[in-house]
Each structure stands twice: as structure tokens, then as C-alpha cells.
Length: 65
Image 1 (cartoon, one colour):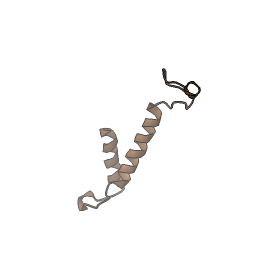
Image 2 (spheres, one colour):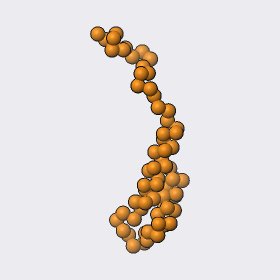
Image 3 (cartoon, rainbow, N blue to C red):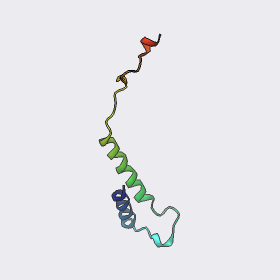
Image 4 (cartoon, rainbow, N blue to C red):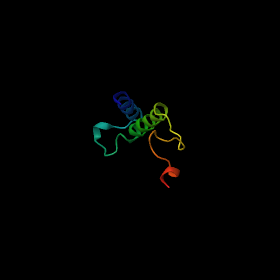
């Protein structure tokens, strides 16, 4: 995350946002980039579980009836 936030600040300065003037939403461009990249990294790093997979030891709906 620190590397992503550093990238966000770089993006903010590349968009010619004058951080020194203390605008309220000065870092929105950088924050959007950080959020997008973090979301993509999560998609890559965390595998998607199938909805038909069952947890071991958990009873199925048929067993509960």
C-alpha cells in the first residue's frame, strides 16, 4: 500500500494539482488510481470461490430437511 499511495501522489502532481493551495479534493485523481490498482491486485491475489463449493463439515440443505 505505501507504494500505491506514493504512485497516487505522483499521479496527483502529474495532473498539475496544486497541493499547496489546500483544495478539499486535491488528491482525488491519485486516490482513484490507487483504488483501481488495489482492486485489481485483490482480484488477482484472492481466488474466487465457486458458489457450489461447500465448507467441510457444514451440512447441506438436503441434510437439514
